[in-house]
Image (cartoon, rainbow, N blue to C red; front, side, top):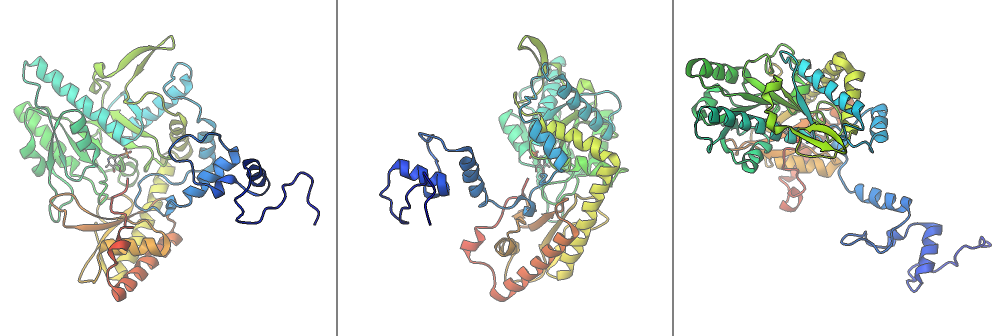
Length: 475
Ligand SMILES: Cc1ncc(COP(=O)(O)O)c(C=O)c1O
């Protein structure tokens, strides 16, 4: 066949004895040079590559990652509507912190905060912050607790050197992180063999005049249940009335904040309770937005200490900020507002009920396998997930099941042990989000059953295979 004009002369495969120019021409004609070379990994390449090549290089490496929709460990959103994706794509260049230049974006943030304050039953006008996620929201909320405690103590002429914060072993690691970063003594209530959340009787012995606050969880990372927030609130109200000790309660509603108002509207955990002074929620979890958005909402504006807010002159205009970061994207704030106006209360309720229904159907199928016991019954308030553990004697454990599932169809269903003193308890957990439809949940249940059959025959996995197991709880 005649060669097209200007095409390179064919070079036998494997012939590396060609010039750079020839290699470039061949790559232009037939493929990409990166296919034959290691990916740049320790210094900037001398010369770059074509945009399409760079895109393909990254895309082909990402194929090696797990598929987010099969990641049943993560609470974080793995799918948004195309219209939301368009809002995100069209606003990646909008720096959120630049309130003066993008006042409408700032107004949309404030609308989201007002809507959340209303959803969480704040008694009146209040304030809050958009954050990178619940971790930043918790840092800011807990800093507010510390500042308020210190101001109270200073005013009374009392010592301010030994602040402590009380929370259960069922919290996310961010609470310990806060204590270490900001010099607060963590008073961690250990979990027990059959009690994976905390209540007032656990909290009471740890409280004193140096307690800056108590943190309670709505929807734990481990089993999806809530601490006894009503009980803890009652304890703190009694303490205030009887001893004059005003200990505030912060609710970590990272996952539960977008679930409880829709599935359990009559359950009180929010600002309906007197001592609840601040709440965080992850927009990127059941708020149904892609990663990068969290919220902090105060009961009243006065719960945010004035001196945590920085007023500065930025690009010639006065601006107030309450954040740990500065420049960041606007896209996820806009995406959150998109969800709020697109779904409304009714839409969120429908979506949460759908997830719950699918979670219950999956739970039933897992229970029917016979090898497992569910952690949490239908009558218990819980995030839309299935937490389960093996019952009876088996030649394998939860970690083996997780590994077998990963090997067979790439499922990421985590197996983990609970925090102390329940660290001998092993649990598996599957989040049921919008991407786990009834049909896909059926397939998962079938795969779990098959994994058990396989393991029953061949026994637990070799140590090498077990290394594939997802042993974190997922976030
Ligand atoms: C209860 C709880 N609090 C806090 C966090 C941290 O949230 P984020 O990942 O949004 O920073 C998580 C994350 O899984 C969580 O489950």
